[in-house]
Length: 111
Length: 110
Image (cartoon, rainbow over all chains, first blue to last red; front, side):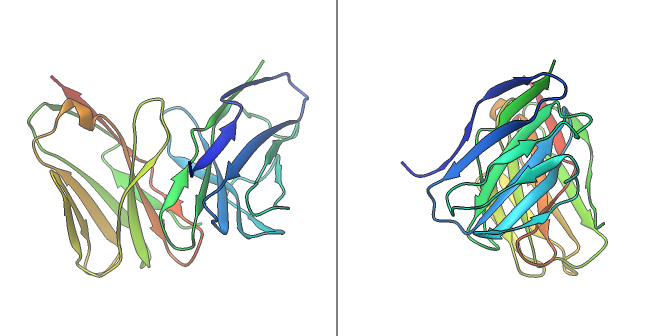
C-alpha cells in the first residue's frame, strides 16, 4: 500500500521540550516537504528537501530542524526555540514539479 | 518573498449555486495546482495547469490558467454538500518549491 505516513497523529509537548515528528513515504519520491498550518490559515513552508542529504529552509524555518538521511524519511524536530509551536503539521512528497502527496498530518499542542 | 493571493477567503453558498475562487500571482508561474482540504483532513491534489490559457474540467469543476500565467480560477457548478472544504492553489514559480495560496473556505448550505 503506497503512500505517505505521519506519526503521531496528536502530540502534546511541554514548554521547553524538543519533539520530533515522523514522516515516511514509500512512493520513491525525491522531494519531501514540511508545512505548518494554523487554524483557518493556509500552508506555510518550513523546510524542503530535493534529494537525500540535502535540504533547504522554507519561509518559516526558525525554531525547526530536519534531516534527510534516507530517501523515505524526513523527520521534523520542533525545538524549544520555536515560540508558538501549536499547529497542524503536514508532510508531503513529490516526484519533482509534480503532484504533492500529503500525509494525514500531526496536531501538535504545547501545554 | 513571493506571495500568491487567493480570493475570497470565505464563501457560503446555497446548495445548487455556483462557486468560484481566484488565485493571483505578481510573477509568471511555471504551473499551478489546485488542492482540496476537507475539514480536519489533509490537502488532496485536484489538478495541475501548465499551459497559458489552459482550461480543464472535472465533472462540475472547471479550472482555468490565465493567458499571462499569473492567475487561475476554480469554478464549481451547482455546488453540493460534498464540495465543502478549503480550496488551495499552489504555484510553482521555479522548481520544487511550491507557494500555497491562502485558501478559500467553502460552506454549502443545504
